[in-house]
Length: 331
Image (cartoon, rainbow, N blue to C red; front, top):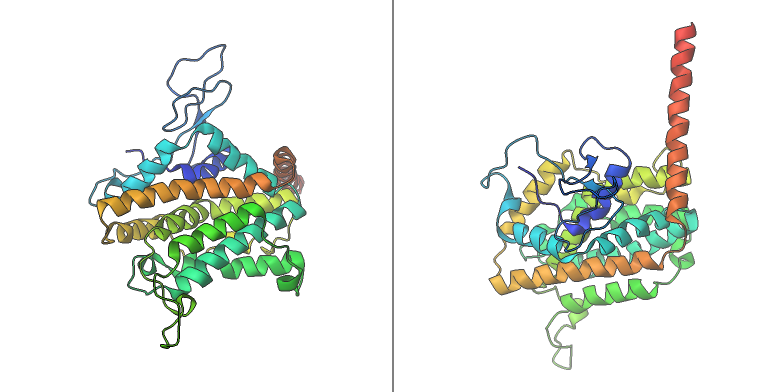
């Protein structure tokens, strides 16, 4: 059975197809073709676009059963379906092109990392670090998902040891994103007064359930496509082979992405939420997608330059491998 994919993961899906992953195939959809070229039909889209190819979602090697696949029920299903149906192919294209712009040059990539740093600092320091571990938000907070430590390493690589004072301020789209995170997670507790009550900044967060949409969209998207996108960034900018500059895309402590995500979705479905709250989370996830698009659209650079650099890198690897084989055969 075909697993449900979400629009927020469209970058991982399309980019994986571009680099030839065995988990994905590129082929025309079953719909009729015109002029020998197949239209692209996006999941949930209402229009057909000419001159592109369709990307099949991941196909499980085993039959999915509702009692084994948490993505087939509950909030997991609502999020997967609710986000997939609401995004047009134009948005998916913007997401993909935006990422390629981000890795088209070190400066552009640094700007992307800077924006992500501000976003994840808000998510992890301002929200998750203050959340009760038994809260809706805290129960989905897994140490391997945390991105801030890796981003700090990358910031030091691109800005230098004094990166905290050298880094650029948040862009307009980044500030909008961060403001939204802080808005939905603000404590409803009273401001400290003469009675000695703690201020909202000093108190643990209550139940900012809408933040689940931000965890779902960012963390799962990063986890699904992290290794692939890190490799693409390294190739396009010829970064050191030791992983410098792409620590953000490295997930320590995740032995099996599939098992980890299955466990995360299972926990997601156990959250005590009303149907109204679940729908609000789906709506928020769609907003998060738009906020990410806003950041990517600010980036300067050519997506095609990144693609070309990657292609040249892959060609160089192939040439080197061919030379090694010829040398061995000639001995």
